[in-house]
Length: 391
Image (cartoon, rainbow, N blue to C red):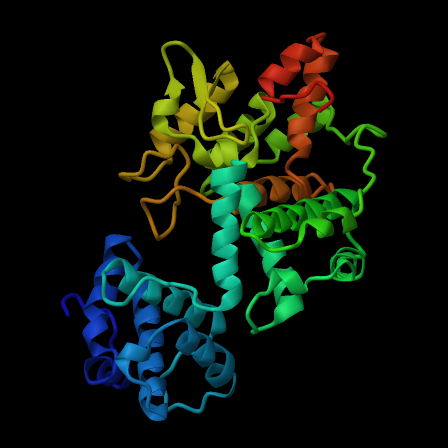
């Protein structure tokens, strides 16, 4: 393996003569392509060496590498590891290194793609296809409902085969009001919608479960009984001033904040912005693959455009990715995730001394500012891409 960054003789021996030797070059190339720093590559290779030593000590072969082996190493061996020095004991380093290791091997065709084989995972895949192809639900909604239905099925069946006809009305009520008794009405509505969708799937497949739909209670949630909390103009100015644009990633943070505040974008809208979505000559920004699953074109405010341009010109790293906002640390050439946007805004809230934890308050504030400026409700609904005037 060229450009070896690991230096200790013991880990080198475990890599060169261990059960994972044939995979090391693939992993090294994977890390280099994504521009991980030499120090990080050294740490991650030491973690793989430790895994190889442990697998050899308990008689596991290379073909047994997978999620089960990784979880066993992290959960059983690492907390009470007595392997000879030097080994890496930091759990988060090992977890990150080993997850990337599996990803590298799968993408490189070294091992088979991850295919869930247990009963609940197969049922989740079937439910996901139903939600996408029949119901047309957005990916974020499907992910949330898959988590909920997985939790419900594990409570009901454990590791046994899933038999929908064995589900009783009392099981649905127990899951909603005992398992999740602390949830808000909107949270309970989401659970009811998830269970109702799953019952529809099983009924479509021929299971006698239609009666279960009537066992799901209607959850009262008077969404228009109170107005959402919003930030004032002074609060907005204070929030923007709290972002230090000279700090690392400061211009990216400021540009993302302006997108949320000036355009009322959702977090996912910011993450999905691409370079070709901005028309600098016409002064417009295009939103595609959004929550409403349609394409919208909005005017780009001058301040927002200047903030994005400053980021693109002076701070955005060289990358082949077409996303506007990309990662500034390895793995490079990838867009940011939603958590990056949320952390930026919540950190700004904390600097202002506020206890807000929901980024969506900025979207509410955009609507409030437009209303205060005399903008008709229909135009506000169009700007925020709402289908209903009630919203």
